[in-house]
Amino acid sequence: MMSSLKLTEISKKLGGSSKVTSPSAAACPRGHFAAYTREGHRFFIPIAYLGSDTFRELLNMAEEEFGEPGGRPIVLPCSADRLEQILDAFRSGGAKNKCAGAGRISKIW
Image 1 (spheres, rainbow, N blue to C red):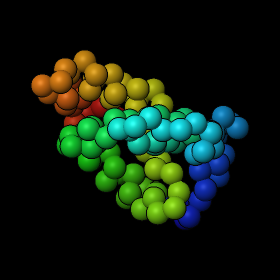
Image 2 (cartoon, rainbow, N blue to C red):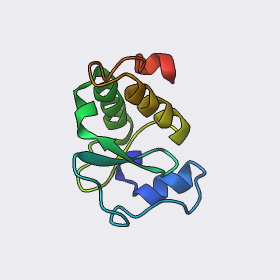
Image 3 (cartoon, rainbow, N blue to C red):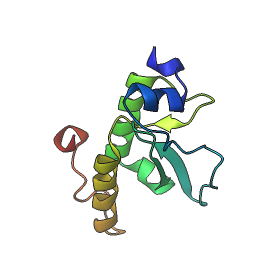
Image 4 (cartoon, rainbow, N blue to C red):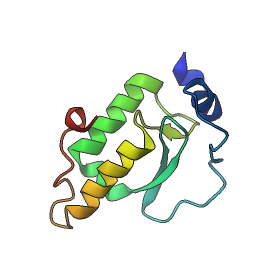
């Protein structure tokens, strides 16, 4: 079952390399949370993004696929390239509307 696998095991199972970063390798900046992609790439995501429908849907999908994080890192069910596209859409949306351009998860997967 995937939810019981460690991050490195998820990476190996999905064909990732040894590029998985230890959760304690670098401190997470204030106001952000750390999340990993399927391949084990680590991202620091602003906590403010959690208020968006896009990130709530993404986290719900992660919970369905991998289970609740509990004592392990959050693993998002997407590639690093796709997560970078999502984050770029948030950044370009401006402070007034952080979701502008992000679209629904189903449209950008």
